[in-house]
Length: 475
Image (cartoon, rainbow, N blue to C red; front, side, top):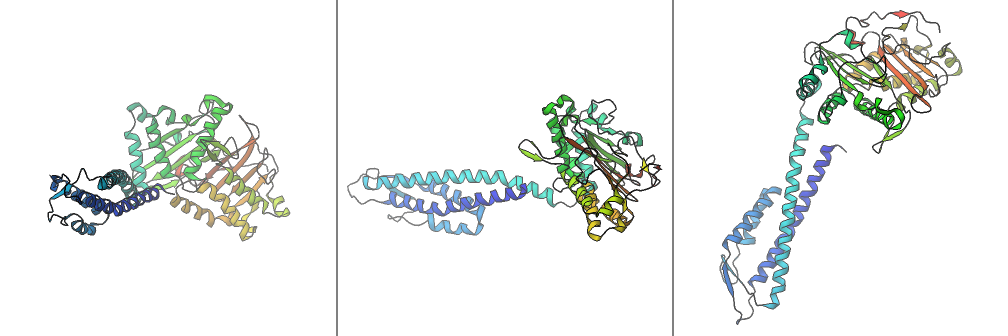
């Protein structure tokens, strides 16, 4: 359940309990008054005292409490407090301290009243704590102006404002195609890993949370995709840190960079990455013009537990690609098979634009409608990593180009054995998935990449720019 809904439910519960107490309280007051007004023994010594101020305090207090629930209920208080007692006075009442018969009733009524008053005060404090939190959450959720590029710029500015001067110098850089291409799938300490930006390990926990808020805003909302997937990939590296990988692994080694100043005008990229992860959103004049290169990998593969939570960040990609391949007939699968073994990706880090000159495999125009949908389902597991609205734009373009898209593979259709390989090659979309041997843990683990032949790095100069070069490749 959403936190806003939880807060609203707690608030309703507190008010309900308070209403019940307010319903019971008049009975206690009435019992209190009956006990104190009783004077059946003429010879008893009576102690009289002025009660006007006490009754006024009670009346003011209950008026405030009842008004908090229903302003129209305040009228009933006059009948409760202003009735004349047996002596015909509204300002005096008598207490028989020596009337043993009524002393027990007086103590019980008084104790019940005090307990209820205390409980009501505690309930009011709980309501006061809940109301500001719920109200603030509601404003954040209901403000349509704080969305899209406006929200992204606000969160980026908040991140920059939280940093020290030396941290800011590492985070905020001028946009350049050269820096945009500095991403890797390797751990940060490995030779050959190249990244720009500020790593989480050089930030305070509050600064990391601010950075994560920015990443959450530019990522998708689906379970095991988008922001959820990013968090699980960080968890996977923390898992390696404590499972034999050592200090070279962990969320502290993930970097965030702003290439260009985030604004509604101009060009900037939000780059985030580390071991097995590269996220690159490029914006031009407030519009997402590129969401690739987008690299995903994970070790361990499958389900693993971190902080009592089950993680499975790439299971859905593997399952969708396997379903796509197993839907093929024997003849179709033979057409999709590539004539070589792939131990890694073709167009991975530092291999920009290295697409084959001629597409291989089976063309989607030759597939049934159901099989085409399975191809789209596989593509969606990558496109859904970006924010939901932009994901629809990219998916529509790939859907329009589907008949001219090819699928191919090498190895088994389970896509879990070592050297299993799958490819989706379209006029724009390029997706690769490679199953490889484990590095830290036994078994296999996947590397995968989503590229766009016309919009890598936003189509900026030095990227593909609509003229994606292909290289000759033997099948």
